[in-house]
Structures are given as structure tokens and as C-alpha cells.
Amino acid sequence: MAGTTALPEIAQSARHRIAWRLLPFLLVLFIVAFIDRTNIGMAALQMPGELGFDERVIGLGSGIFFLGYFVLQIPGALMVELRSARRIISFMMISWGVITIFTAAIRTAPQFYLLRLLLGAAEAAFFPGIVVYLTHWFTARDRAKALANFIAAIPVSFVIGTPLAGWILGFHWLGLSGWRWLFILEGIPAIVIGIITIFYLTDWPHQASWLSAQESAWIAGELEREKAAKQADRSSSITQAFKDRDVILLTVLYFFLVAGNYALAFWLPTILKRSSGGSNLRVSLLTAIPYLVALVAMQLNGWHSDYTGERRWHTAVPLLLCGIGLLLAGLLNPKLWFTVGLFTLVACGIEASLPAFWAMPTAVLSDAAAAASVGLINAVGNLGGFVGPFALGYLSSRTHSFTPGLMLLVVGYLVAAWLALAVRARGQAP
Image (cartoon, rainbow, N blue to C red):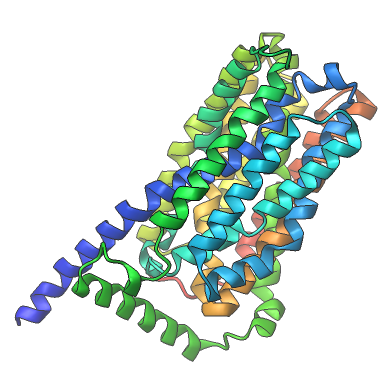
């Protein structure tokens, strides 16, 4: 009897200790990663004037990041599963911090393209690696909530990063423009935290000196039981994961989701600059508003998805809201604050869909198959990060309006919502 009553206490203690130990630190890592990935959106307020870049160059440079990002997704996710996550994550952070700093020295478009390509390669395994890493520590019932806390870095990075970038753009030290200081000052934290990572993170529960023996045994046992259940339900081979109908649907869905996400991330400052005519600092503050609200929407949707055990509708409905918001923004050409409100709806839809979305592949596959599927989904899906920003920039330069590009994104989000509902509901437990 004593053993049965003690188990819930051990379970609660282990879950809380793991969450408080890992999630805040992983959140900081992703904030740094996302700021270094998307600070080009704010830098684009100054770079074209100094370097003579047009919107096509900025759009291509923003998007070419994802070509480098594509190459190492699957091997990176597998390395995190099979080898040392903390060493791989540490190496990636130091590498992309150095590349971000070097971006401050560019003079020509080819240099810009090359460094963005290298930055994508350096960051490639980070996100899928973290998604896989969370499966080493969190059971299925907690995974969407853990992902929501981790992915909260996306809106948080905008809430923190855009006002910070707007302030740094005002610097003119040592004869260097503000956008150059933006890359220098935002590359340094990645190097510092990358060094800390190798000492702070732990690869597996049995290696965690910060867990008691009972807590370590409980989480290891729970994860092993889930693994056995999934293996009994379906094959976990990597080859079959790539052929899986739902993995293919999730990959295409994520392509459209990412295309709109990064088109908004890279071009929203410019859209609001044209709409408001305000200073760079004011534009940065306006850009932060949608993501501040989206942070709340993400947590609520992730919590409710875990509470109900439902993933598909918790992904599809937010994506439908994205399409509605972009449709109204493109057709109505509203005044500034209505524009901010509509893009707030879009940002809420994007961020709220992510926790439930990323809980789906790891719920139905196990071990290397789950790692490979996450790598595949993130790799192919993130090619949308090339298409979205480039298409929006290209169409804007040809038509002198963002409306055609926004309508293209509307179609993508409507298709993504339909694909979310086409995924079979399985492997979900409240």
C-alpha cells in the first residue's frame, strides 16, 4: 500500500523537477536562436539604403537561410537521439553565433547570401534536436505543454528582440551603422550560452544527478512503457516513417505553416513601417504587440490540447484564423491599429498551432523513427521559410504592394488547416 501511495508523489516531484530544470533554459536557447535567425527583418529597415539591396535581395537572403537549414535536419535529429544532445546543441550555438557576427561585415549580395546559407546550416539540427530531446524527459501527457513552453520562445523572441533591435539600430559607434551592431551584439549571446550548455544540460534521466534515484527510475520506466506500446502498435523503422501517410501530410502542412510564419517574421516590420511612417523604434514596438498576445494564445492552446488529448483541431482552427486575418489585412488595407489587430490574429493562429502540431509525430512513432520523422517534417517544411519571404518580397517588388503575396499565404493556411484534419486521430491520450 505504501508503494502505491508514494508513486504519485514521486511522479509529481519528477515532472516538476524536470520541467523547472530544463524548460526555462531551453526557452532561452531558442530565444537566442530565433533572434539570430529573424533579426534580418529589423536590419532590413537600414540595409537596403546603405548596401543598395532591393526587396528581392532581402527576400532571397532571408529565405536562403532555409536551404542551408534543409541539409542537416535529419542527420542532426538522429545524432541527438543516438549521441550526446548537449554537445551537439552547444556546438551549433557557438557556430551560429560566430556566423551572425560575421554577417556584420557584408558588403555585397553574394556575401549576404553565403552567410545566411551558413547560418541555416549551423542552426539546422537545433529545433528538431530539441523536439527529440524533450521525448527523453517528458511523457506523452506532458509533451504538448513542454513544447508550448519551449516554442514560446518564438513570440518571446519578437517581444524582446524587436524593441531591442529597434534600439540598436540607433547606434553609430566606431563608424559602423546600427544594423551592423545588431548582428555583432546579437551574435555574442549564442557563443556564451553555447559554452554554458555543455555543462548545464543532461542527455538522459539516468545521468541526472539533480534527480533522486526514485525520480529517475520513475521517468525512465514511464518512457520505456510508452516506447513499448508504440512499438507494439506499429513499426518504428526509419524507412517506414518516411512512407507514413500522416508524416507526409504533416510535412506538407508544416511547409505552408512555415511559409506564412517567416514571411510575417521577416516582412512585418517593413509592412508596419509603410503603414505608420514611424521611426524604427516605434515600428519595433508595434511589431512586438502581435507576438505578446500570441504568447498567451500559444500557452492556452497547448494546455487545452494536453488536457483533452486532442491535436488535430487544436492545430487546424488556429491555422484557419491565420487565413482569415491575412485575407482581411490584404483586401481591406486598413488603418494602422486595425492592421496591427489583424496581424495579432495571424500571429496568435501561427503560434497557437505549434504545440499541438509538434505533439503529433512523436505520439505515433518511437525512437529513431520519431527522430527521423521530426527531422523530415522540419527539413522539408522549413523550405517554406525560403518560399514565403522570397515570394512576398518578389511580388511586392513587382506590384509595389504586399496584397498579392498575402493572398498567396491565405491559400497556404487554408490548405494547412485542411491537412491537419486529414491526419488520423491516433496515439492521443489525455
